[in-house]
Amino acid sequence: MSIAMLPDPPSRPERSFEIVARRITAMIQASYGIGQRLPAERDLAKTFGVSRPTVREAILSLAMAGMLKVRSNSGVYVISRQETPDVHALEGFGPFENLEARQLIEPQIAAIAAQRASETSFAQLAEALAMMRWEHAQGREADTSDHRFHVVLAEATGNGTLVSICDSLWRAQTESGIWQEIHNHMQMEDYRPMWVRDHEAIFEAVQARNPRKASHAMTRHLNNIRDALMVASNAKSMAAPKSSTNSAKKTR
Image 1 (tube, rainbow, N blue to C red):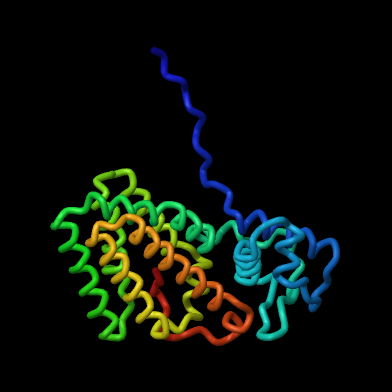
Image 2 (image 1 turned 180 degrees about the vertical axis):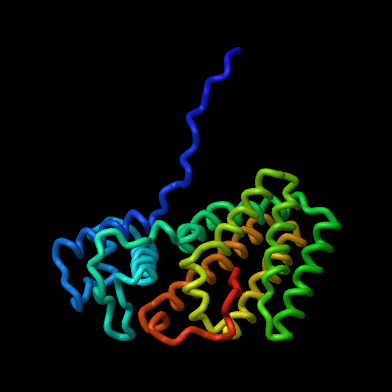
């Protein structure tokens, strides 16, 4: 049996926010001058046929590239008409794009874990939760324990491919330049109680061997992250000074 030769993979898949950023750039070149305000986010989403989170990622990427300025309670303004803003250089995928992939995969991981998890898996999940609570009590972000919780959950499925995918999605998120920019404006202490409750609900459902409840708990957790990101990336939040306590920290 002959084995068909597969084409070489792309060097890097094109990211959704890059595509929309190019279209916004072309629109600016054609119709907008320095100091002019762009249409509202919902109108741009309708014009380009994409979601509002994708438009928001594109706007943030252009703001980080020095082409746009986000002003609180005012909107987004053109501050440069450069033809090729350097959004391609931004690391990682957009946070909403990455989160969409997590929403497709991680609820199923939780459901399978509820069916297959061993007592050792339960102990490891409980340990990760305990560490998360301790880190939050110390006023710190639970980066390591949070990541550990999700990876152990994937390991509990007994499927190595799912473990690799879960870990890759996490690493893609931490490497995202837009994610880091949004995170720098978040007041993380406001969200810590919710993150702990979310993980406790996932753990309890998995330990009860209830796949449907585990899937719903994970879905709720990821929706909570999406809502938090939407709040933290709106014009008012992004125009505010960066939080000095959030540099190099992540939210998951």
